[in-house]
Image (cartoon, rainbow over all chains, first blue to last red; front, side):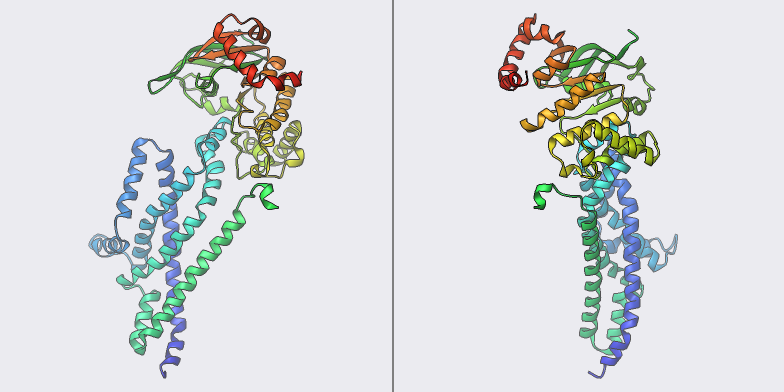
Amino acid sequence: MDKLPDIVGSIPYLLEGAGYTVAITAVALAIGFCVGLPLALTRVYGDKLASSLAAAYSTALRGLPALVVLFILFYGLSSVISLPAFIAGCLALGVCSSAYQMELLRGAIQSVGPGQMMAARALGMPRLQAIAFIVLPQALRLAIPAWSNEAAVVLKDSSLVYAVGLAELLRRSQQVAARTYQPFLVYVLCAVIYFGLTFATNRSLDTVERAMRLPTPLEEMH
Amino acid sequence: MSEAIVRVQDLHKAYGSTEVLSGVSLEVNEGEVLVIIGPSGTGKSTLLRCINLLTRPDQGRVWLDGEEVTAPHADVNHIRERVGMVFQDFNLFNHLTALGNVMVGLTKVKRMPKQEAHELALFELERVGLQDKADLYPAQLSGGQKQRVAIARALGMDPRVMLFDEPTSALDPELIGEVLEVMKKLAREGMTMIVVTHEMGFAREVSNRMIFMEHGVIVEQGPPEQLFYCAEHPRTCEFLGKITELYGPRQREEE
C-alpha cells in the first residue's frame, strides 16, 4: 500500500478532470435544451411538415450511439474543420441529448392539456405568448423529474469524450491507474466521484422540483 | 341592426363528414341574455367557439360590434379580447393563483401596469365574491370557486359579450347555485350574455330569449315563456319536458 500517498496525491488531478466532466455535461445539457425545446414545440404545435421533420430528427439521433456521433464530429469532419476535443464532445453529447430532451419536453407539453391553450387564446393571447406564459411554466415543472434523469445520463456519457483524448475524469483515472499500478483503487475512486456528481445533480433537481411544485388540493393537506 | 353586438350569419361547420352546424344565423343585442338549449352534440358549443374563432367555421360570417370577425385579415387576438369565454371545465391556469389568473390577461394582453392590473383583478374577484381566495391556486379551490374565478378572469378583459359554455355542467349540484348567482348578477348589471346551459331555472328567470337547437340548426326561438308554455315545435316541447322533469324539483325550490 505504499502507493496510497501517490493516489491521494492524485486526487486534485482527478477532481480537475471531474471539472471537465461537469463542464461538458453542463454545456451538452444546455445545447440539448436549447435545441430540444424548440423541436418539442414544433413537434406539438408545428404544421404537419415541420412536425414530421422534428420527429425524424429525434428518431434518427436516438438511433445513433453518442460515441459514433462524437467520432463523426471529431474524426469524420477533421478534413473540413478540426474541432477541439472539448467542443466536439459538447456538441456530440448535446446533439444526442437534444433528441431525448425533445421527447421528454414533448411529453410534458402534451400533458398540460388543450384547455389551457384554449383559455389563453380566448383571452386574446397570441400563440407564442400562450406558450411562453401559460403552457411552458406548467410543462417545465412537469418535465423536471425526467430532465433530472437525462442530466444523469449525459453526465455519465461524458466519459465517452475520453475516446477522443480529452483529459476528463475517466481519462485521468486511467493515467493515474497506469502510473500507480492500482487500477482497482483508482477506478473505485473514479466511480465514487461519478456517483457523487450524479447524486448531487439528482438531489438538487429534486429540491428544485419540490420548490416549484404547485399546491395540491386543501383536503390532502390535513 | 347597428346595436347588435354579435351577429352570426349562415354558419356551417363540419368535423369530417359530420355536420355540426348547418346554417345558423342569430343576432344578440346589447344587454340581452340569450340562452341556447338543445341535446348534446347539436353544435351549441361549436357555435360559441365560432363566435371568437376558437373554431373556424367552414362557411358563414360573424360580426362583433359591427366588425367582421371572419374577415380574412381580421385581428383575431384583438377581437377575442372583447369576447369573454367561460368553459365547462373552467380551464383556470393551474400555475397561477386566483389573482394571477385574472391578472395575466391584463398584464400580457392588455399590457396594463402591474399595480393597476393587481387592483383591477382584486376588484373583479370581489365582484364574484372571492377576494379572500386571491392567493389560492386552482387546485385549492372548489369547482364553484374555480368557475367564479374563470368568470372574473373573463370580466377583467372588459368584454362586450360573455359566452358561457355549459358553465355549471361539471359542478356538484350544491355548487351550481353560487355560479348561477354570479351570472344573474352580471345579467342584472346589463352584461350581454350568450349562455349554453341546461339550467332551466336560470333560463326562465334571466334570459330575454331562448334558442332551441337540434341537428345543427335553430329549431325554435323566442322569449322563455313562449318556449316553456306554448312552443310551436313538438321537439321543443318534448326536450323541455324532459329537461324540466329531470331538473324539476330544484326549480320549484328556487321559485
